[in-house]
Image 1 (cartoon, one colour):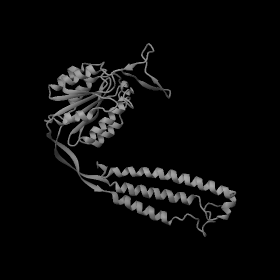
Image 2 (cartoon, one colour):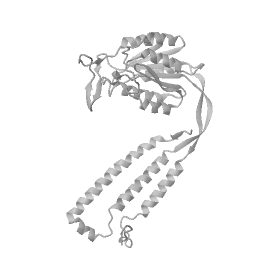
Image 3 (cartoon, rainbow, N blue to C red):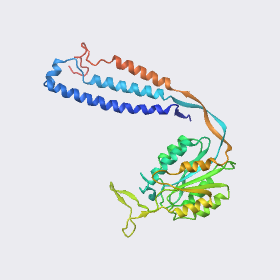
Image 4 (tube, helix red, strand yellow):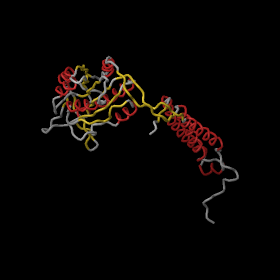
Length: 345
């Protein structure tokens, strides 16, 4: 399977100008119609201007916008990877275990704990170079979301799809997540390994400290990030289109609080550090600095070594559409205006 990418993806932001121009065009058409109405009845005006067309200006504008989109995409340089090859890289293996239990929807960290954690992970992926990364999600049990890989685009794609409904069993099984991460590293790999556990720390399922000690005995470093604030926050839930707060069996609103003590013990047992996130920062950059202190080892990786540019096709389409827009007249053809192809004699 070929790999698709944009060599200059930052230019795709220019596509945002198209809806802006479209709104301006619609506004100008409405204003033009209002001005014409001031001169008199529309039917009378249409008889005075028999060659005026309502449809052709819209068609010309649509063709011009398609041409602009094609040119912008061409400037972004779409490419297909044409050849895979094995290369040697120096890096570490990193697995992120992300808590997706309902308590991660608490809004003591804006916009909520889970979305803020996902944003921080995305920024972390942007800073990785030659390291391998894997992604595990957990609640009442742990599941592999992305096996260990050097494909950072896939990592961000899988990250975007994560939500609290992605796992069937609720809870917070930190120990299960650590154990699964331990088994998910590349077999027989000599590279240094690290696990980052991102959670609010309300562990109710297993002995996470024991799991961290077992992983550390195999040379795996475990860091923890606490999502949430010590004073806690209610958990919003959506019922019948209305946002409510989760309640316990007695009808009291459930307040989820950050369990820092547990996360500090897990990090200590795993030979790593604990960082508490807040509304200003999550702390992954600090952890990345710690991870970069680990010795980089040589690893095999499959990458696309050659990419074929496809921009010329988009430029050709854009040029064709520009010529087509030029050929489309705003006024009706004097000799063809009365022809009706669908009339029945």
